[in-house]
Length: 426
Image (tube, rainbow, N blue to C red; front, side):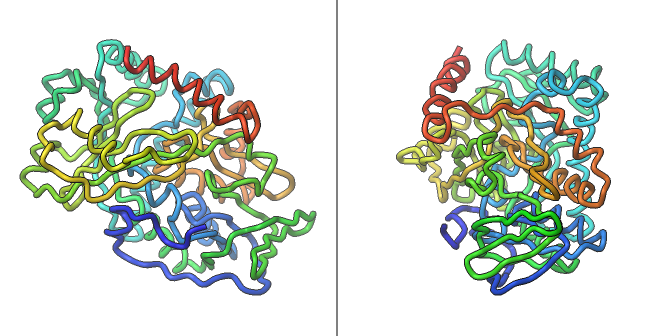
């Protein structure tokens, strides 16, 4: 694996460096966390605050995966709609999980405030409709969340309202949430790492876990140059876990997602594009999402690769998608384009649980990770501490393995996704 961050706007604008050693020799801890993204670091920080001795092992660098590359959109809910969870878990459990997804946003804000994390936290998010059918779906969604889940911070915007806030003619309306927002994801992740280290957590980078020896009294995480013996192990590598834990590897699939960042637009031009500095995502299945950076660039994400291979001419492809929304940026060049993998589940619901004794995992955030990963870290810490009721609730979500095994699941999914792409065009 690479030992450097991808060449992204986020890496170029990182406001600190977290220097961590390589694990060498044998160590012991109460809990060993595999993965130094938001999930793993949140779990480690929560556990350290409870008095646990925690070691984090990361194969690359802090925030190297999706936590440091994503669109940075901080939104409620999960990757699937709530009826999917209701069907598996029932309405009462689904309501409890929904409330936790809203709590996840509060957790992020609380961490930013408590640890003074400079991550450009901004409020406001719009789910944007392109077609009348999508506008009707947003109306139904608002009614469902307000009446069924008690979530009343949503506002339905017509085309005139959207265009008063955003200089694009592509959208006919949208659903605005003042409670959601956006962040610089890498700087948030680095801030969590700094807070965890200050709380006593040991983080080792360039220290990939090659195998885990499972024992009844203690588990051993092996790396090329060392090992950590711990009572509990938390698997938080998500799309980059590989086959380290075979029991759960077929329940997720890594997919590539991609983002471009323009050259700086200047304050006046940028604010004319999105006047209230909200984040925006359309409601296509293969969606576009975008927002402004703190230094007035347009960050524009879209495209999905189910082979995890980046599209050819990525920079030009991202620029062309941006111009469908903001044709007035035709004179603007992309300064960065990058991608990385996220892990999806078959039903797009989060996959939390246990494998064997004292082994826990959280994965499959399906593009909704910015807030939900912090929640996962808190729930993992609760479970380790013997307060597993909320964590175990997520076991009620039924997860099927991807069909076709390692070799055939990608082409099978590509065929299935072709139908969704066609529906987006109708």
